[in-house]
Each structure stands twice: as C-alpha cells, then as structure tokens.
Figure 1: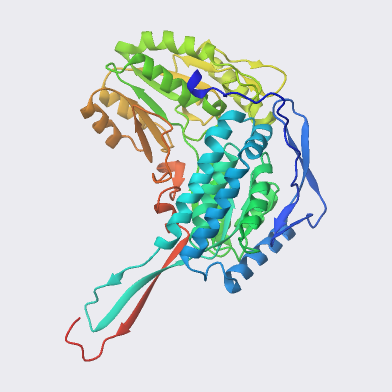
Figure 2 (figure 1 turned 120 degrees about the vertical axis):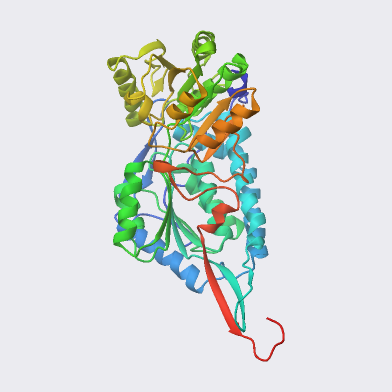
Amino acid sequence: MADIGNGHVKPGFKIPEIKFTKLFINGEFVDSASGNEFETRDPRTGDVIAKIAEGEQADVDLAVKAAREAFDHGTWPRMSGYARGRILHKFADLVEQNIEELAALDAVDAGKLFEFGKAVDIPGAARMLRYYASAADKIHGETLKMSGEYQGYTLKEPIGVVGIIIPWNFPSMMFFLKVGPALAAGCTTVVKPAEQTPLSALFYAYLAKEAGIPDGVLNVVTGFGSTAGSALTSHMDVDNISFTGSPEVGRIIMASAANSNLKTVSLELGGKSPFIVFDDADVDMAVGLASAAVFFNKGEICVAGSRVYVQEGLYDKFVEKIVHVAKGWVVGDPFDPKTNMGPQVDKVQFERVLKYIDIGKKEGATLLTGGKACGDGYYVEPTVFTDVKEEMKIAQDEIFGPVMSLIKFKTIEEAIERANCTKYGLAAGIVTKDLNTANRVSRSVRAGTVWINCYFAFDADAPFGGYKMSGFGRDQGMNALEKYLQVKSVITPIYNSPWL
C-alpha cells in the first residue's frame, strides 16, 4: 500500500504545543462570553488534547457584528480584486511555511496520516487558496444588448456575511474550499469548525491576521452545532450559509434559513458512491483503486466508493485479491510511517462504524475480512462484506468508515440501475477499458463527479457537489464563486444615438 503510505517521520519529531484555543473575533483571540470550554480529544488514545472556548449565541452575535461592520464599512469588499488576491497569496505563503505544524494538528485532532498531511492535505489547501487568490480579479459582469434605447450591464457583487460550517474529516481542505472563494469574492465570514477538530481552523485564523486580512473579515467561533451552529444559521444578519455535513443537519439548516431572513444556502451532504468494475478491467488496478476508494482516510470521506459493483466474469478474482489487499492495510498511529490508516475521529464515530458492521452481519451479508476494533484508541480494521443486497443498511447508509460492500452484476444496464439505487448522488467510479462503456455509464449515473479509471482525482478547477440528497451548490472551480456573489443589472437610457 505504498501509494497511501505515511512516508517517513523525522526522528525525534514532537507534536507541537497547542497555541490557539480561544475564539477568534474581530482580529483577536478571546474567551467565550460564558467562559465555558469543551475538550478536544486525541483519537489515538481518547486523551484530552486541549480545552477549547465554547462559543454560543452571544459569541456568534459578536462575530457576526464584526463581520457585518467589516462588510458594510470596511475595506475588504471595496478594494480591488487584485489587492485582495495579493493578501490571499500572502495567506497561502504562511500556510506553506507552517505545513508541518498544521499537518500535526490535523493528525492529533482528526487521526489523519501525518506525512500524508504534509505532502498532500496542507499543500493542497494552500493551492486551493491560491486558486481563488488568482481568481479574485477575474470576477466581472457582462454588457447587455438591450432591445430598447438603453445601455445595460451587470455587476457581480459580494453577497455579504457568509456563515461557514465545516466537517471534521478534512479540517484544512474544507476550510479553504469555502473560505477561499468567499474571501476572494469580497465577502466577510464567520467559520464554525467541527467541534471534533477545531485546532487547525484557529491556527488559520492567526495566519489570516498575519497575512493582513482586515479585522472582522475572518472570524472563527468554535463550539457545537446545536448552539453555535444554530445561532449562525438562524442569524438575521448572515446573508449566506455554506455547509458540509449530513442530510439530517442540512434539513435543519434549510429550515433555519427559511425561518430567519431567507438567507441563501449551499449544502454538500455526503454520499454512498458506487464503484463499478467491468469484466474488461485490469483487475490489479481495479483492486488498488477500490481499496483506496473505501479505506483511504479510514473511510471518513464523503465520496468513499463503498458500494463496489463487480461484473460477474471478474467477480471471483476481484474478491480474492481485495481481501488480500485489505488484510495488508496497516492500521495504527497516524504518526507512524508504516501506517496506512489511522483511528476514527472520535468515540461516537468509532462506535457508529462498529454498529454498522454488526448490522451488516445481522442482515445476512458475509464478512470476508476485518470487522473488529483494534488497538487501544478508536481503530477499526478494514472491513469487506460480500453477498450484499441493495436494501441492506450497509448498502444504503453513509457509514463514514472503512467498510466495503461487494455486489455482483451481470449487464451494463443492471450496473447503471444499481448505481442509481441510492438517495445520494455525490460521486461514482468506473473501471473499464471500453470507451463506449465509460461514456454510457458516466452519462447515466446521477452523480456530481464521475471518475473513470481513477479515484479521488480532485482538482481546484473541477466543480464539486452532489445530485439528489447529496445537496446543491458547488465547491471548487470558478462555479464556487457564484454562491458568494449577487448579480446586479444596471440600466441607463441612451439619448439620440444612432446605435443601440
């Protein structure tokens, strides 16, 4: 599993001290109004890493007030896109200068592989920020061809104060996936990171201040969804909410937005992605891609290809090889260079994964390998089920853990029908040597992203989002800017002109 390995940790490496534990409001780190704190824990052991300021309604009010003041009267939305872009590039410079510390924070807070974070996650987050820094001066409207004696054009203006709620599985990438385009558009922001993984978001707030982002433009309120998150989504002075998480919480956010000021909402709500392997596929390539599609990041990834459909002619060989590969994945300390897969993010997620494994066995699926907890922390073995039926919970529910469901199919029509047999529509994978098959299936599967003979091929320029209950709105690409912008038409009369 060298491609998902954990590199080489320098001898004597020590986890850095936790520098930032308070709320970041209007350019300052401050205690919560209540003085309350909550614990963030190391998923390797369950031990407390730090106590974090617990933001609630009063703190969200202060953060939104700062963001509103910065938007209504500050320089950020009024400076040129070029000037904003230069500051955002400086922000990215500082992220790159602190890669090791940031990767360590996400490893100790979320159980993510440390060296993979250094090589991929944090540099990728910086590249995402640079993409939008470079896009800041390319936001413009268009000239209109009016039918009467008028001159018309459109302006694209920042939408205002944006509330951003990010999940715990990719704390750094998700931060910049949403903060990057919002800031580039000229908006001001209040970020509520997941309570499980607040550490890197607070560090990024510090770096934003160092980069020269004006006070009030980027605020970070740590706390729980039911308090800080709810206060943000229902706030009358927030103009937009961008959320990544579960459909259940997405529904609550939509209701909250509707019942407050009808703020606009964009939602990315997870998936249950199909990974389809046809008879003509290179079996070793297919097995490598399928194992990574499910076990990478301990299965805590919204596009996990956890429903693996294999055509009957290749099925037996695939099953034999995938079991062998799954047994070879090394589960352990994310700071250990031999580790392929770290612990689940917390006890709740750990117990959720084990519960679904038990459900799979009770529903009649055959457990081929894995299925047990291992080690002293929140570790779960890579797990493979076969004899899985579409109606089973392990084939329908997003488990968010290292659990693969193997399903045999006969025809291309059956593969398409089964792939679409889900309430979700976030991503899909196809492995085949036949271009016609790839084209037909990619156009027939209802998913926002389809990878052909690859998986996890993310790029800042490729729009990302879902169909059906995987949500609406797009992150990444220039499309992501649109949800943080308003379109204004400006029309003036033309007098005595021979030209219209």
